[in-house]
Image (cartoon, rainbow, N blue to C red; front, side, top):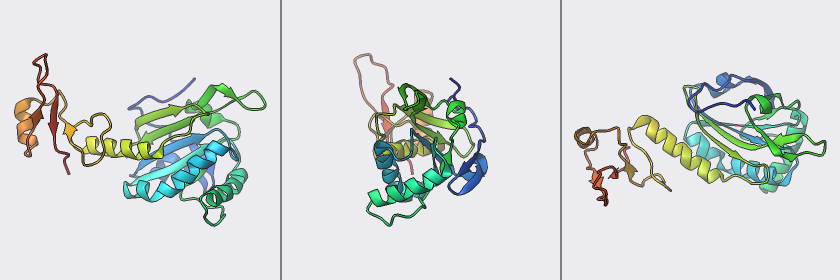
Length: 224
């Protein structure tokens, strides 16, 4: 099944959405982007996910990330479903969300972007759209992809965390360790010689001693 690899330019798809026709690259402009797909409108797990995405929209905006969703139903269905999503959040049941939803009734984009879940079928026996997360950089290249099966809801706090890591490591020559959160110390990549690291990271570099004697576990404070 077709798909996009990390580092490839994300297709400049043209689509009809809840805010009208768009070209993805124009929609994103110079911002980061997160495209997240859903199996179907008016389904329970999807409603919880979009409800959470709505609540976190200010956090994405603060990071200069433009959000856009995709579901295989029509724009009309998306607008009706948006009322349910807002109501689920105990807000006014209006048709607008802080981000558009792409209509993909023929599943053409889901196929092009490698979004189908072959193990989950709809009532017609067709594979449903998986829960994909594609993060796109300002250079329009794919920076991260996460693929969840249709039966497992995503963690949008984790999506924000990886965006924080991607934006930090795009600006500074560092890596983020397991379970890293903003403010935690970061790691000096093996590609940075120690003499260079000492010049770059003026707050100091801490090296953890290991039985191998190899000096590869190097930490420093998060750059700002």
